[in-house]
Length: 392
Image (cartoon, rainbow, N blue to C red; front, side, top):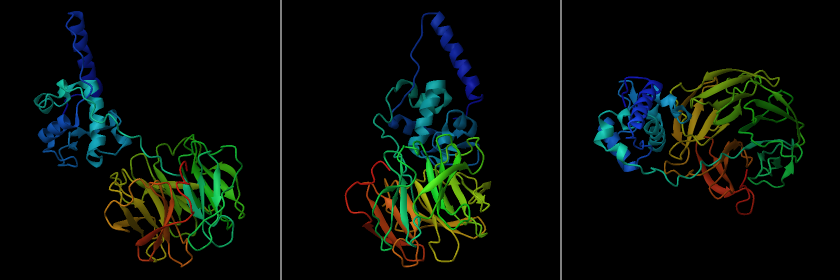
């Protein structure tokens, strides 16, 4: 796709042409869909069928989007550039371009593939995206054991105390039962105000990050803004808390709307500032499903573990100064984390090593124990029963 004008200008030209046809009584329906097979033909012509191509010519991905067109039609909701998005995501944006501009948006390859003559829906039964679960691990009741807290199907924050041996029980309200947490996008746990008790920070329905302070006995209160009230956290995909810069205060790391992982440093009094990139600004975190923070390799610095686009759990090691490196697999590369809706880091079995807890495809809470060297194993149930975490 190498248009010579902006999407708006090209659409105006197309509308003028259609208007002229209508005056003459010779209107024709515009193409607004095409099968995956036809899009494959266009991609083969445009890029040799390489959906991740970036040759440096200013056009990206299998269908050769310019950054301007990609952004104009909503592509940055998926990735900063088309080549960083999946094939399906590129086709979904191409469908919008096709509806707005017709097949000549790809002047050579569109007509060659008969793009305008194919009216099939490429993804007629595409499932809705799996909503990430909103769960965290911390010692909320002050007994020295890691608990799990999460927003349940009724939009209440519930506490499940840990036994220090890899199991949780209970299920009590932490801040009433009025559905206060409806439409919260993501939560993170840490001692954000420096009182020695674990708090919860969450992105609310207005895209502001709020602080709910813990009392050390399993309850929360408050709800003050941590970084203004201007909706700055809109379209963040995930957040995690830890002392990433080594100053003894809890920070927030989050995947932003451009799919970059940014660091917001804490002041120890419940507020944040900053927003610096932790691992480049190339949208490398596109399609990550979930992230968790912890010292997974035992070097005393906070790392990030995350489920990537291939459904593998990868470790990104921290340098103690707010940056990450690496990206090594923590439990193989066979896509074992497909449809997991949450991962959380913490020493859940009391052996001094950071583990991962996660809600799996069957909505069960599973424990994967860490070895202190960046790997996890196991997969045992933390709360007996089947599908109990559906709706979290």
